[in-house]
Length: 392
Image 1 (spheres, rainbow, N blue to C red):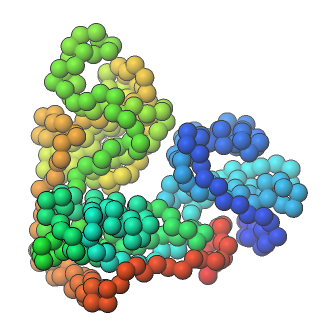
Image 2: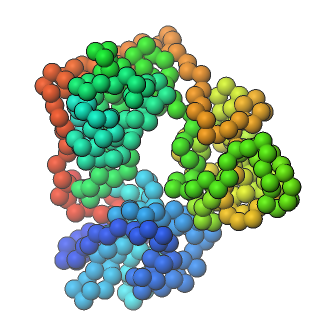
Image 3: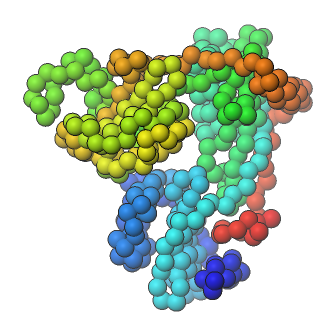
């Protein structure tokens, strides 16, 4: 109980502390981070349980973290985000430091922007808003249904309504696109995020890009899909029915599409293997994992972490071997794949049409007023820690 009282008092203690913000460097690991800050690696890493050690491997370049120091320049606390949900909290108690994983406290605002097309959607959205993330989610949302290069013209309109999270007054995490309209040749095309967390067009047809661009962020392709490849271990020609992504051991692997785990265990030359069943007879496979984070029967969403890059089974080094199969037949994962869309009916369609009507009214308003960009003002409350009661 005393410990929790102390935790609740920390924001007040920090009133006189010096708080600085930094970015995680490219190639930096949690261990090198601790060494750079001259913090005890034994207690803050080597003494952690296996799950926490694995979680620390999610540290990624470019993420903002905060350090608070006392008047003597000694570190009091550190907040280091690992993903959209949790962060590492390192804090000093007397003459020692402690480690814990805590939720990220942030605020979420609904925002909107209207953009005139002059070049390309990605360029024009970035130029108008300064957000590459916003430009990326817009292009991704329409990539399987519209051809921007062929059909988009100068002077066409784009409107987006989206939710954006803010942490310490700064944009945090990818925005969530709620609704969007793009005008192409005087014809308007819409998508809406429905209550089932899927995107639908104005006719109530599901619109979904099935596969992630890569199950391993930032990884390079070390071997492509081929019916004939000289195997580096077996030293003979053999089909390579997947794509290999070279990455550092322990790098997170994400589900390429939403589905159900139908296998999560060791399988011969695959080593530690995860299989995910998707709609329409599709299956993805993730091989040579260092460790598996999911279990058989569990449902996952596209982008969920399912394991970590390793070199188990028949492998010459750390990488992910990624396969895509349709009714058991291997196909090239790099080809554009779109799961057959479904159409809403009955009560689901009625609810969707109501949601659509509300978004259409907002989009018409933004177009009528030629609203360029509605952005939340900077959040000045220096709230960092454990409970929303400290955030106003």
